[in-house]
View 1 (cartoon, rainbow, N blue to C red):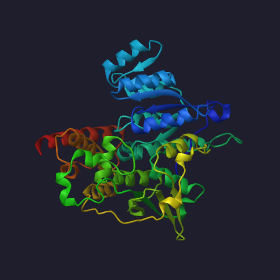
View 2: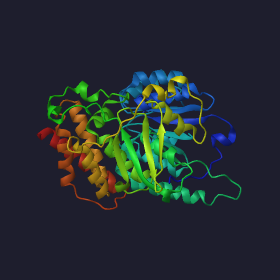
View 3: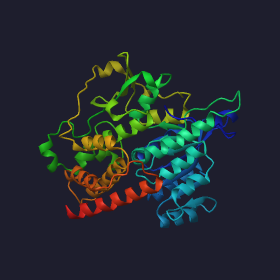
View 4: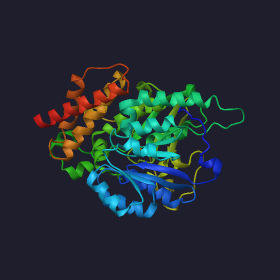
Length: 414
């Protein structure tokens, strides 16, 4: 269901060398876990490039350990400091654009782990050039799924014209989110026509047992304290509102080429089953594992191989004892319903949803709006946007700018 691309002479497997990895968002939680996987497997992977937003000190420490060929730091002043400390290193900043940094490096794998939509052009460029994208950024497919799928289809068309005897490589896009990685693994070797539905599981987030009437009294630390996963603040808030599940529905629809009506969400508090696939004969395949992002990250980097893991990454089912499942409460978590509605509308609606959520969550984290206003603001922006049925790149960028500015205005008013 995910397109493969043309095999290049620089392919790491063909030469026996370590795969070169560029990480967008190396100072975030996924980026840090990616570096831990690389640290554990120095013969399999090495760092080609690192990027960060403003955490120059941590990026500097990563430079000293992993010796990349180039880095990107959005903050121009911080980038200037890095140039002074590492005169031999190519350093990019926001004036030179992050996709110019990613294109500069001839890496085998692009780990798209930065939050927001800034990585879109880098992802499209990597696919066009036959490089694997390990996708950990939800917003990319939510805002521009049609463009990414079109790029993958074009790459797949190129792969079909390989000379006789040449092996078609692994898919160019492999999801890193634990839920989509689980579905990807469950579908390996299956015929797409045999799929009845996808079942995305979720722990329920930090507010699963909190009554909706108490949401207005929540402290910020209660909202971002996820019971199972260690994540950044933005995705932690999305987990609290269940917007993360909504975005995953849209992602899954694009990645696995299924309508949203065939994608179900189940709350699974143990967070051991990361997602499931139900087939038309009634069989259900599930992928289980510990709640550690390093597992799906390592799989995305090493596929089709599976590398050995330490005992701490292994699951002890006897200790868990029982699994529980229940449907999500869409009234209590209206962001999930907003995402379903945007997915059904398709076109530019998911882009507006993603942009509005990004701004509203940041406004909440900056103490500009209360937690309960997040879904209200997103719904307001969605209701006022002019729908575009099949947006191109320019239209997507325009819609995203409009939704961003419109949400900022509402955050100041409410």
